[in-house]
Image 1 (cartoon, rainbow, N blue to C red):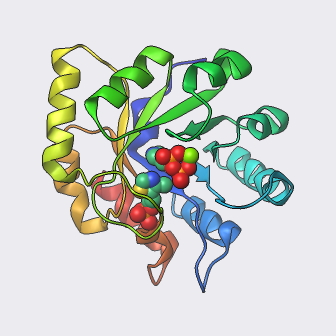
Image 2 (cartoon, rainbow, N blue to C red; image 1 turned 135 degrees about the vertical axis):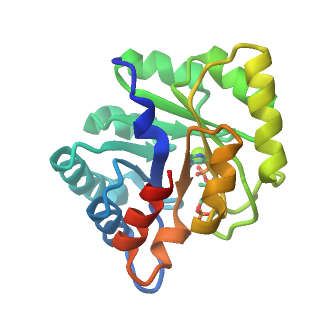
Length: 212
Ligand SMILES: Cc1ncc(COP(=O)(O)OP(=O)(O)O)c(N)n1
Ligand SMILES: Cc1ncsc1CCOP(=O)(O)O
Ligand SMILES: [Mg+2]
């Protein structure tokens, strides 16, 4: 696949729903605010429930020239010809997904340690979602919290071993955290709650992009 511009990795919006906004509402707001990378994450839903939502998001992302990934679901990504998939420790291994999808799809991998980053890099991932930065209720069964020091340590080890792969921070990130997180050397951030809980999610997205 064509090399993805690093600019693209600045902000990834991860879908979620709350009392005010459904999956599509949140995604529409993030796109309206200028986000160019959307991940549809619908834990506990069936593929039949995800499919119509994914088709709508695919159309919106095409219109906005935004990248569109789905969390966990390799087969659905292939079926719907979405841009890619994000995979964690309990999902299909990255090397297996690469065999199924080929080089034309983006595959992201979750890391909590430098060893995870290295394994995903060697398995052929396109980028790393590294976290959690801090506690969040958006995901259950969190790995150990990394904090700023965790990112500094991982980025340092990546440099030492010449592991060159885009890495985005994730987990409980607020707007106020962004300047310090970016100073650690990560390429961008992935977030959900910060945008979804804002009074004006599109405006919040715009403000976040200005910090990145
Ligand atoms: C960008 C990004 N980073 C990490 C994750 C977490 O993926 P995973 O560990 O598989 O957990 P679930 O999201 O599937 O609950 C992610 N989705 N995106
Ligand atoms: C999917 C995921 N993986 C680690 S933390 C997280 C949730 C991110 O959402 P939020 O920004 O609301 O903490
Ligand atoms: Mg997963």
